[in-house]
Amino acid sequence: MTGAPASLDVITMGRVGVDLYPLQSGVALDEVERFGRFLGGSATNVAVAAARYGRRAAVVTRTGADPFGRFVRRALAGYGVDARFVADVPGLPTPVTFCELFPPDDFPLYFYRFPKAPDLEIRADELDLAAIGSAGVLWATVTGLCAEPSRTATLAALGARPRAALTVLDLDYRPMFWESAAEASRWAGEALGHATVAVGNLAECEVAVGESAPVRAARALLDRGVRLAVVKRGPEGVLAVAADGEVVEAPPVPVEVVNGLGAGDAFGGALCHGLLAGWDLPRTIAFANAAGAIVASRLACADAMPEHGEVAALLDGVPA
Image (cartoon, rainbow, N blue to C red; front, side, top):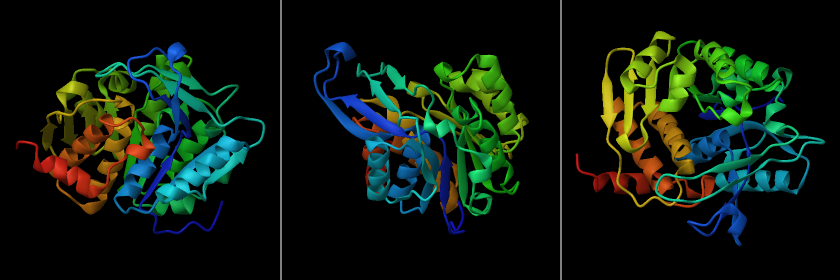
């Protein structure tokens, strides 16, 4: 994997798959009759979200050598995401994910990543470390640490970054991918040593640093060496604490929730955009918070990512 442009704004690394989401809300999965097919996977969604704002984005991931793998590539091209770091893994199927929709806050997920997800077969010796090191932002996930060879590859990518670079660790903890929370905590701690930004919800912060109270969680993340800790508090909004002492709290943006599953990835892509643009922290967090709210009001994840004008319009209608 060589020849990537040094000018990529955002490189994400991790999960990809096909979301098969019900076109019926409030219906149990065994009773759903109609589904929509969408591109999915948290790291992939973040790349799509960043591309919506005109950022040059790429994703490092793996698919099966199957029709859904071909769909992933077509979808990435359609969203303007560079797929040069996407490769097939023979013998493993492209993952699919189902969900149930019980708004406003219950969206069970069902992952089909057996016998093993191809995106956990990313190998360190396949990485273009020059491209990863020179990208404006690297976005890596804790899920990428749950199995080898992805774990070693993820740590190699994180280690290829200059210490002053924007290196984001998405705490993205999915218990079904791990043997134990203790194992996830161990490897999250290893990865945090390379990150300059950490992003996670309260449950993910508790796994990563043993704290679930927002302020204590943010401080614990800063103590691990990051320069910016972002704690997503669900219906309570977002808390961001910088190493220089700046604290920003963004209240929730009121929307009619359809599917909350893609909101965090929309937040991530918008966060990358604001950080790259050099915005101040209040503007960056407000923008990312609004982007997440927009996606929560829509069914899909990747397909639902907003453009800059949509986010700005929503912010204009939010009381200061």
